[in-house]
Length: 401
Image (cartoon, rainbow, N blue to C red; front, side):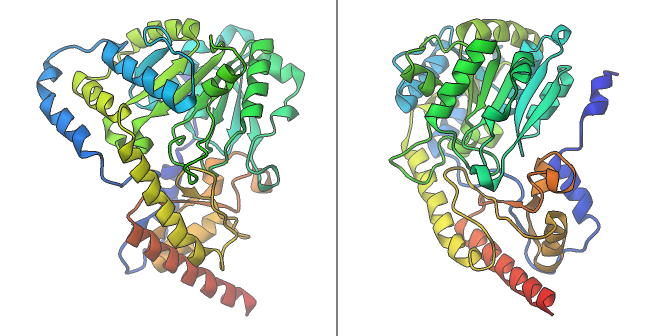
């Protein structure tokens, strides 16, 4: 077996299951806020297209995807991120969701022979770590804490680490905090990437869930274009229909950017065997071409934040995020104890923040936080918030005694 498999750590939800298996859930209807799986209804017109296209399952799909799909993706990227142009033949590829692509890009791009380093935010989406380890790289963590607005301190990276770096993962809006990397910072990173010749893999899967309709989060390609660097050299962005369109099971996303990197990445993917089935491609075209359902999706999330924050803020140190659908409260206590007791007393499941980070004790920037995914329907989110508030009040009273 590949010895790098021994370097992988248990996935956060495996650890959560082990934690909660030790406790008995309260005799109340279960509410799960632990997994970021969108639960809003998927667009009906996308499901109709999927059903109408089932006969196309009889044909082999191309790894590169149909040109109509790549054109729809390129058009959406240009419209959303104010790009002057994007070549659908060379600068866009369909992928089976961002998860597989964020993992695969490390396998394709990292040169094991050169003592590679991957730089990643911490806390983080665990795929970044697994991808780096399975590609034979070391990891350098950039802690995201409240005193830095939950953004990585990129300027703390030493010159020697930039020189070793082959791949930088960034996530904006961030998981779990929802923090948005400013365009000026993205442009500074692009300059570093071109100076030291590493690839930026920008995970932008939460980019379409933002609270201010007039200020969408900037993207990496947008930052490059604003600099006049429309070859997008060293830049890759990853987008998905999972969060944007409530289609997590469609496994449909895209990667776009540097044509030279994508040419080699396509070569790798041809051997990987990850072509998107044609019915999914046709349904994806319709999804990328429509914004009304995305606007309605944002409205629903805003409604939930408006409803739950007044319930939670009197008892928890929690703020409205810039984007995304998570809350990231600071607990002032053990996050694993909080999650286990909440489950046992209220049958509400949340994810301990330490499971999303690396480090021991207080060195883990996720410790003392929990992640609440507001993906359930409004009524369930309000009920969950009320139970959490009751739990916190009881806990505060007990500790006061």
